[in-house]
Length: 241
Ligand code: GLP
Image (cartoon, rainbow, N blue to C red):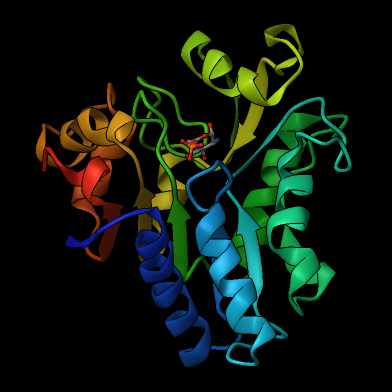
């Protein structure tokens, strides 16, 4: 694991964007695994900025997102498809057909999971997977005690996660209870994993995930076993490492 310590959120975002853009420059048709949440927003903003200056070209890049809420339409303000359009895709020259997010309205979610696994396999696997981390150590929506060996599957969100994500909805009742997420196995099969963390409120879980025992109680702890892991964080988030 390589740890990159950045002074603050802006330099953390810039460092993470450096790693991602190097991937795209070296291999223009890279398959990027992308994440939502507030942490990677600054990284996406930096990439848009470099794209505007003509420094990066996404015309051949393919993307697969980690997860999506079940029950939300792609154009719902809180869907992860909408998040990706707003925070990245609408501002760069990626081809819409090259971007993949699980379909939250799929009539048969189990079938949608199988379809999603086939998409990832059909693309030849993920070159670089971006990950944020929940306060309970979840990655994607792989909550504590999730089996490590799963690929894309349907999950029930924990009360913790529903509470944490309620800030984006008008009330906690509006937060979907279920989601589709890539599993730990899908994530671990990525050739390179880039974890982004920011803020003092993540310091404790960062320590438990990266300096504690590998356990399903802290899903992100499995990442310690990955042969090519980059952890990019600001001082506040890395203060206990
Ligand atoms: C959500 C997403 C995760 C993300 C987490 C942390 O639950 N499904 O992929 O890592 O939030 O979000 P934040 O970066 O806002 O702390």
